[in-house]
Length: 260
Ligand SMILES: [Zn+2]
Image (cartoon, rainbow, N blue to C red; front, side):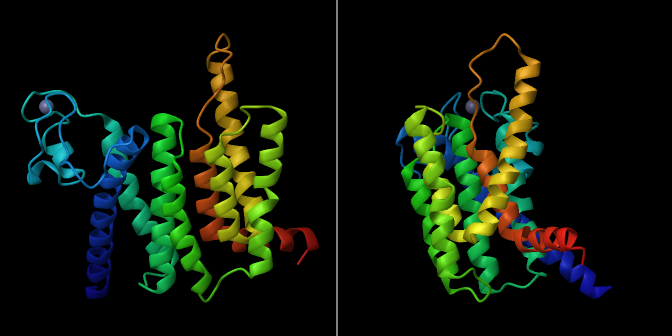
């Protein structure tokens, strides 16, 4: 019983930590594409420009407590901020559970990678851009993953680096505008992280989910011919699942095919 309480408390703290990081990543997604500093300048209400006090900055709680309105001018706070904080918290708990609730080196490296992926997904959603700075922020923990005990070999990583990014680059050279430069760099870095097998799996998951979303957009609005939507979030989601569950999924599939 006491153990469960301790676990719940631990997960609660990790969730709150993740929600705080998520809140910060929301600011990153908002400011980086506009070239604004992410460390200088306190958070402010975009409507009345009043700086937020510490008690207005508690993730999730402030939003609900203030009934999603600015305390000064009453302007509504977008739901996007709430879901960004929720996503950060859930992500941290998810990564911890995937490591059987141990704070090992894999947990910290994976968490940094997942937060970078979340920042990239949010920025791409907000601005259809993946800035180079965020790719660099992802590359740092990806390099750190070289030191982890369970890690793909260097040959697999090097193939992963090129096996999807180069075809995407060639397609974009042939048909300009097919993929953004940021998407291609993202896929290259994720490929180096995952090794080639899990890279292909991640791409498969991204195409499956992105394709489903694209079809939904087409059906919903037949007249709208400009079918551009941010593909980065799907790539990030695919990379996330491939990172945490890729090997299990691949083993399961091989077992299915070979009849084991
Ligand atoms: Zn305000």
